[in-house]
Structures are given as C-alpha cells and as structure tokens.
Image 1 (tube, helix red, strand yellow):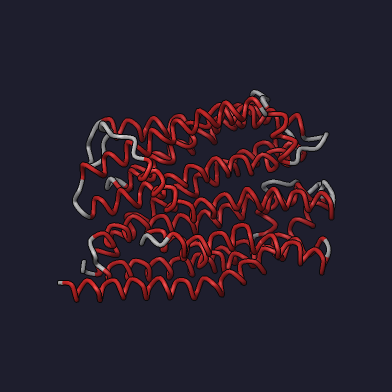
Image 2 (spheres, one colour):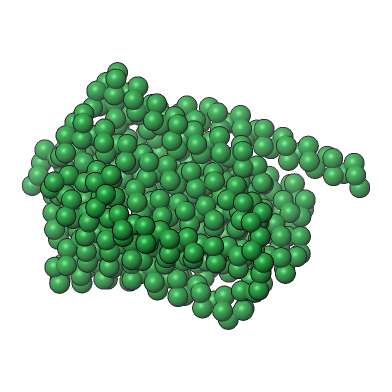
Length: 448
C-alpha cells in the first residue's frame, strides 16, 4: 500500500481541483442569475431558472460519459495498458462530439415546445426562448469541455483542470458584466457570455491533449460498442445525481406554480442556485476521489482504496456542516445578491424558506459520495440505488407526501425528508461495498 502521506497528497491534488471545477460550473448559472436579476428583472431571473433543467441535463450527459470514461481509463492506466487507455479516451471524445451535434439539431428544431415543456409562462416565455436558443448553440462545447476537464485529471494534470475552469469563470463574469449591464443585451447576453466562456475552456483542454504531454492522447481506434456500453453503465449513477437536479427543478417549478403561485418561482430560483453550489461541492469531492480509487482498485490495493474513501467522508462531513452554517447565518446577504430589499415580501419569504431548505445540506454529501465511491470501484448497481433514490424516486414521493400533509410549506421540507430516507439506505450500501472489496482482496490473497 502507498504510505499515508502520499495518499493524502494525492487526495488534495485531485479533490481540490475537482471541487474548484464544480464550483465554477455552479457559478456559471449563478452569475448569470445575479446579472440578469440586476440588469433585467425578477421575471428574467425566473426564466433563467426555468431553463436550468435543460442545462443540467446537458451537463448530466457529459457526466454520464466522463465519469464512465475516467473510471475505465484510470483502471486501465493502473493496469499499465496505456495503448488501450488512449483508445478508450479517443472513443469517448468522438462519441460525445457526435451526441452534441444531435442534441443541438433536435433542440433548435423544437425550441418553442422545449420552453413550454420546461414551464415557461406567458410572462417568461420570450426570456426562456432567448436564453435557451443561445445556450443551445454552445452545447458541444459544454459537453466536450467537461469531458476533457475530467479526463485531464486521469492524465495526471489535475491542476490544469483548475486553470481551465478559472479562465472560463473569469471570462463568464467579465462578459456578463459587459453584455448584460453595459450593452443591455438581456438574457441573451448572459447566455452568450456563458457560451463563449465554455469555448475558451474547451480550447484550453483540447490543446493540452494535442500537445501529447501526458499519457493520454488522441489515437486511431475501433468503434467498440461494448466499451461505450461499459462507459454508460458506470456513468449512470453520477448521471442520475446530476440529471435529478433537472428533474427536481422541473417538478418543483410545476408544483410551485400550482400550489403557491408564480411569484414563488423567484424564491425557488435563489434556492436552486445555492443548492446547486452545495451539491456540486459534494460531487466535486466525490469525483475527485474517483480516479484515485479506480487506479488503486485496478492495482488491487484495497487499503489505499478504503483510506481514500475515509478521507473523502471526513471532508464531506465537514463541508456539509460548514455549508449549512453559512446559509443559516448569512441568509439575508445571500438572498440580497438576487432579490432587492425593496421587494420586501418576496425577500422575507425567500429568507425563511432558504433556511428551512438548508437542512438537507447536512445529509446530501454522504449520499453523493456513497454513490460516487461505488462507481469508482465498478459497483454501478449499488451506486444506482443511491443516486436513483435521492435523485428521482424518493424526492418525488416525498414532495407529493409533504404537499398533501402541509400544503405549500411541505415543498420546502420535502428535500430534507428525501435525503434523510436515502441516507439510511446509503449507510447499508456503503458498508456492503466495503465488505465486497474486503472479500475480493481475501480471494486475491488465496489465489496468489
């Protein structure tokens, strides 16, 4: 086994860039929301939130392939088969590029239907169409850029992922300021700012692989559908975690419109931004440990795998408590970034429900890292139980039950109830996954 000092060094080397990258993704939409709210108004802010499920779905598709590919590539590199690792890397990049082209065409052809499906109302329809219509043009850069960002860590250059996303984040903020506030381009300007930022991050990562500095590079390959199937099967749990955000926002938007009213969509927009930031923090920790765990799992180093998991759990627990305390203590300041104090009724309502919703932050991290770890050690079925549970199944039933019991107030506590139920399941699943690794290690010792 690697000594503990080396493992801690690797943990920091991979987790910090991963969390930073996920934060930047969260800030993309958050910055758009802040500038749109200040530069256009609350209806435009609601429109950006209505568009969020589409953007989350696009990001989830990238995670689907990226997580699966990085797991397979990392395990293959751990087995010292660089040739196969390069073929898998190239295959994945080509597949996501083709997928992006298909999505762009279908989305543009059905833009009006898509906006209405997402929940656009008469007052927000035009804003949603403008924002989505622009974002769609950059879908390819969204998907491929994140794929390369994740795989650059498997290539041994996690610091480059941080540099790439920082370039993109700074570009997004500067262009949002110019396009939305200075040039008054509205929600369309915010979408262009985000899209151009993605083009830059894609270019940065793509150039790295063209320079052939690391182990991974583009090579000739055969279209192996069994590998694509393997990539997808491994990536489904993390994909579910992310796409659940899209499904949940969609379901919540519809529930809010029917049970509370359109004004509450503005409040929920703020909750979505904060929830996304906290959730992506947990996903960043989870995705940070995945390539290391996969690598040592490929090397049959059971102790290293479980040590990395232990570090991940400790960091997630600390992050959960800190996230909860920050939101509870600084609720007013957080809400004021999006909603003016002048609109006192909506402002006070948002402060109240954000504090209630933040209870879920104490639990979600454990559930996310359990799913991510099971993916890393090639246990996608166990991971799927957790991610499907917290992402779609349990939250849907919880939302319905809480609305029936408490009306509109039940909407804001349903996420906490859902995470708590999944937490009880996740504890048993993580124990089972650890026991499986122990058993595999004992069988390996018997063989040798």
